Amino acid sequence: MQVLDYCDIPTSLKEVQKLGWDYIDVIFFTGDAFVDHPSFGTACIARYLQKFGYRVAVVPQPNWRDDLRDFRKLGAPRLYFAVNSGAMDSMVNHYTAGKRLRHDDAYTPEGRFGQRPDRAVTVYSKILKSIWPDVPIVIGGVEASLRRLTHYDYWDDRLMPSILVDSAADYLCYGMGERPMLELTRAIEAGRNRSQIDRIPQLAFLRSGRCKVEDALILHSYERCLSDRRAFAENFHQIETHANMLHPQTIVEPVGDGYVQVNPPYPPASEDEMDSFWDLPFTKLPHQRYKGKRIPAYDMIKDSIITHRGCFGGCNFCTIAAHQGKFIQSRSEQSILEEVKRLASMPHFHGNISDLGAPTANMYGMHGKDLSRCAQCRRKSCLFPAPCVNLDRNHERVIALYRKVDAVKGIRHSYIGSGVRYDLFLDENGFVDPSGKEYLRELMLHHVSGRLKVAPEHTEDKVLDYMAKPSFKLFKRLRTEFDKINRENGTHTELVPYFISSHPGCRLQDMLALRANPSLRGIWMDQVQDFTPTPMTTSSVMFWSGIDPRTMKPVYVEKDPERKKAQKAIFFRKK
Image (cartoon, rainbow, N blue to C red; front, side, top):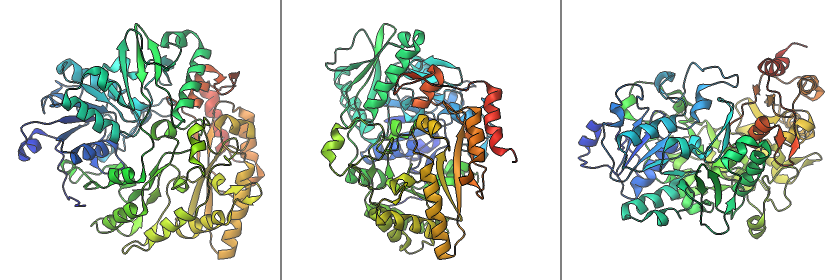
């Protein structure tokens, strides 16, 4: 694969003219600066469409506060506009858990704040629809994906309908979008009628009247959810259950005089398909328009390698499975090693891979032993409340990958910056198999830069149950094995645990118990974050409704801002 040192995806009229184009097929509008790297969704979809012959342009961080010239400068595309807020939800990007405005934006040149609006997807889409009413608009990315149905919005403290209602977009592509976006692009180009396009997997759309899809899962209406918190909790339990099934139903949610329809997703990508998503001519650089400017988010990922997608951990506060899926989709070793070789040849690279992994690094290559059982499974998590007996937790493949990467010429170190799940290789009695012990040893001795970060999230089991995290006893066992490996090898690697305060179910006394837990003595304790309810998580449903959607039983929720501050402050108070 040829790697370019410049980006051949234009972002201005001058660049379009330089390429000699007399039309553009698809124009992306995004809230991020444009970085041509596979860690950024805009680049992934743009490159994938380009691979199949489509002309794609990107308008990054358009000015929505002036005469809207950025929305007009490239004219109308031949097929459609594609809109996303960037790699983050714009509200998470803009505000702290205390709803205070942040002062920087890592996805903007020089970290400048204020280069995208709140609710960027809706703002961009409505502007485009007002200027180009006849051109289809397709929204996607994290912000759209996690707001595809009725959701709790923490910043307005209210339930909001599907983002399709307010944005006026024609289609929403949720999840990882290479396959649905290619199929949709081909369908629009071929002039297929609406009923044909409406059958494409992994799309959502708003329609008037009543849905005629047979065997669809019909949810409570948005209006019913507004007046009945139990209905909202019941809806979410159904949505989440289907989001974690291999063969879910079509989901339909009535709203107003119509309905939102969410088609089932594509099956998990095969290894060959995953390789095809990365075998593209990414420059792995910020667009040349940013020459001389620093983009903080790029600095964090420029020397990273993504090995897989998905997570079957099922944490209640996490959105990874809702967006990437529960089933692990891994690249081949060959594809990863080829990318490592290309990275090693880049002028800026100094020999250290900053992160070799994905949402959960040690899930690479993992799946069920009997895949037919996985096809029938309705569990949200393969690890909670106990590891599934059908889950193959062997770590030999991921250990082999690490060692092959380290053997590539030009690689000094490969670090695992992603999170790891220690309940994949440990139980309360010790290692689940010999490969688990070897994995922890390999990780500590060769892939950690002094500190291993893990996320027990809390010490109190009743709070951990609301989080869908394993018992703190497992962390105690981890520390025992961790200290033993340090002693045996004369190393001084530190263990750094992460915690969450004010999660539903957590009271002030629970944070006091966390702070006083004897198993944390001697550990550097500075990693705690106040819980932020984000759309499409079980925890956010608990926060809004006061109901655990898994059991439909009441749950304590701390909402008072001062008492939330107190929970977090206890963590830092000197003993």
